[in-house]
Length: 251
Image (cartoon, rainbow, N blue to C red):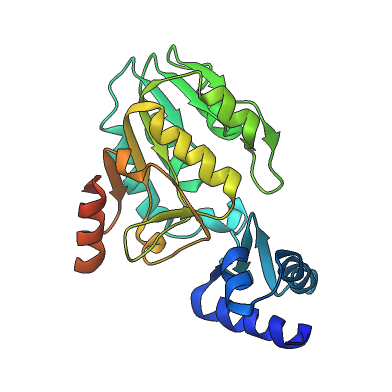
């Protein structure tokens, strides 16, 4: 098969599924990993897909910048934040992930006192720090290009030293079989580590994340105590989530 034929096949499959793994393409096209990487790099250079660790996403599946995401379902995210904050008593320790929905959680915690907050989101650190007797620990790591937040293996390693009462974790999508995912492996690894680092880990995701798979599975979703959303999913997804384990809280 010529390179042009392989690349058309890759784009057709991405249009259908939104995400592909290199191992899947190696098997289906019967070529080497190096060949597939060259094809993906060529398509990415033309802006036709977004590279991920071990695969690719359709360009439409790439995560938008913070300002764009903040405008999507802002009211629903505010409601999620309020519902999440109701779980947290004064004096609790809380891990708060970066993202627009977790920022809504932080906003809803402004009236709380004496919190110990662990976060990799610089805006959340400034929002909750130096007020009401709160203490804030900023998780170190590499500053992201499109987020005022840190990420990477240094962030995961530092987080592994701590354990909190609660964690509030954002995600990229929830597939129809109840699997949660992220756009990159570092983001997925960090969110999986957060799920293991709290007594009551909570995933916060508005209804626009339903039916979406963003490329990289977030492990340990079964450890989450709650999935907090603004709208109940349709019955098949609700049943899939029930099998996964977390209780569903609707704001």
